[in-house]
Image (cartoon, rainbow, N blue to C red; front, top):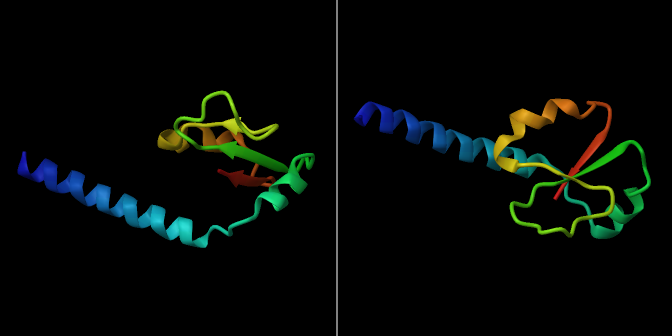
Length: 84
């Protein structure tokens, strides 16, 4: 049990640092920049909010941020993905 807990804790800490490193590398954009991208077919806007109700950015796709591996591969690698 102690080994399982230690391994789980290590993965949790590693996940936090990995997420933090990714978040620091992702460029931030303004809402005006997003508005300018809405009609661009090379841009996919992905809503990662856990509770967003029915409201979302026009054309955005809602995805589960806890299960990225289940959906990330369906998006073409040559598109710009904008997450919010």
